[in-house]
Amino acid sequence: MSSEEIATAATPATGDATAAPQTDAVTSDATPGAGDATPSTGVSKAMIADIEEAMKDVVDPELGINVVDLGLVYGVHVDDENVATLDMTLTSAACPLTDVIEDQARQALTTGPGGGLVNDIRINWVWLPPWGPDKITDEGRDQLRSLGFNV
Image 1: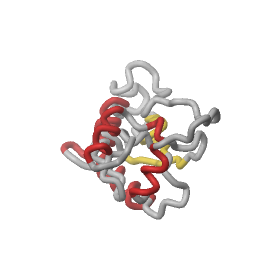
Image 2: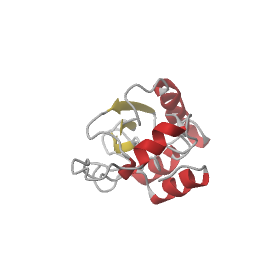
Image 3: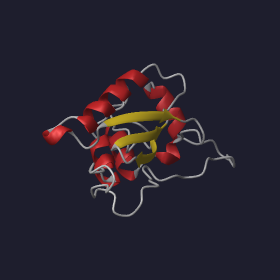
Image 4: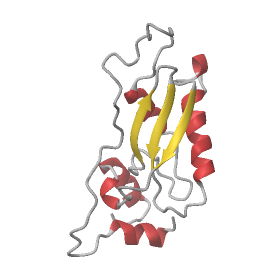
């Protein structure tokens, strides 16, 4: 997304009564005790908070801000095989950089000491609700302001 596009997106139109509902950056339908060994498989499931923190290493290539603080991560689920499914969106459906973001997410979550947080990832690209500047965290807004964006 160009700086003009983010500046336009970050300044909501007056009288816009159709704003999408606010969602948390990362949610989970994981049951309590996630992170414990699963009795049937012995596989240790990653904690959602740890995945969220690791996803802060995934940076939007055009803006230089991480995908969590931009509000691009809508949800996270970790199955019994320790495979993370990330519900994510992009600032634009026409973004040509989905492969870059997927590669960064895979690197952030599946590599590292002990093999990473999860065994594998899947990204479920979602477009509803559409991304908007209301999804940017306060930290993301501070980062964008430091880059000269009006948010």
